[in-house]
Image 1: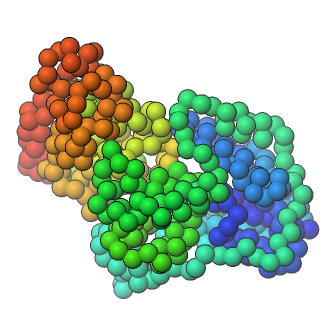
Image 2: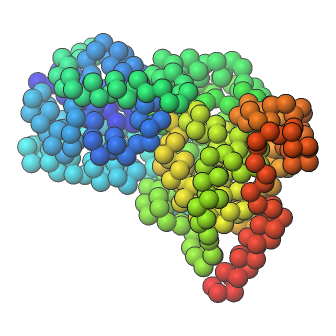
Image 3: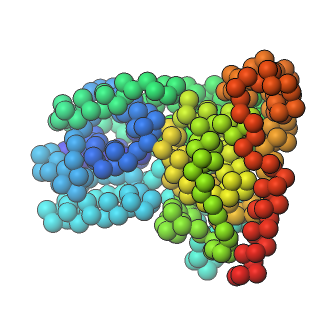
Length: 454
């Protein structure tokens, strides 16, 4: 007999409350992961590869005793509960729409055999749905949410339970072969994976960039961010661990990092309460706004061939690393939505396909922030000028030169306006796809027209 811990977005061994819940019953604990063919195929290739590598590291962390099975969890988990004679299956609570619906189906299937599904903790410091207004309604604005979130607080990191005894591995070798094939893909320069790697990266950040994070976090030319988002997305490290470690660090950098974690939790909370916002506008005030979808222009944006260096650098970084600096995510998103007049869903889908840190809540609501259709949305009339953004946040042009090799011969900030230079200086780098002033005026004109119609 063994209790089952079913891992999903919690691929780690430390700070994992489900281990304590399972061990409290006194028997062995079977660590399980289910390779759902539909969910696995739906992942973008970089996220699938990064998850596969994290799974391999997680197997090692559990001394090879991670049972991997392939199939529909609604069938696989009850079958495993019978194999292990498990009274309970323990999970971190899932609040994303598809994951919550899956868990409800699994719970019903287990109940038919008298097995319980026990939820302990979640991928967040505060489980989405817990922080509410005094009248019980959810928050739709970040600032009051963050104040309530800080006031609510969170538990300290979970200690690994004493006396943890791991059940034997009962994996399907073919399932591990599939994971190993995915892990071997080298199309994108991904970071190393696994809990140990994540913790090392976090400690390096604490010892260095955290001190200047408040000032440097908007600079894509600097190594000023934690780069933990891929690890957070698969649960190789938990935000509760980060928040606990930050207690020993004062200053604006630590305060700003806590606020960024609060944003992540806010977006998860919004998605929990408004699952339709994964694909539709949360705020329908722009429902009558006219959009285009010119295939050649969208293709140029996806390929990093718009003629605007900071945009192209970001889009090429996305393809090359499966990650984009957050400031550049906003700039590239604004360009697609405001200058190319394209619906945010087109860009959000492209990002989910190529991001190793793909996170449904953060991605979709980050895009809606730019598009003016979400919570705390930037007003639609706020249009990022990519040239000015590049000059401000990549002042020497180092970020652009890294990702746009055609422009590496252009020194300093001149790289942000290559159209001002002789043609031979920019090689085959394209001319600007659109005129920024013309398209900004067009965007504002469409906004005014939508208000009249509305």
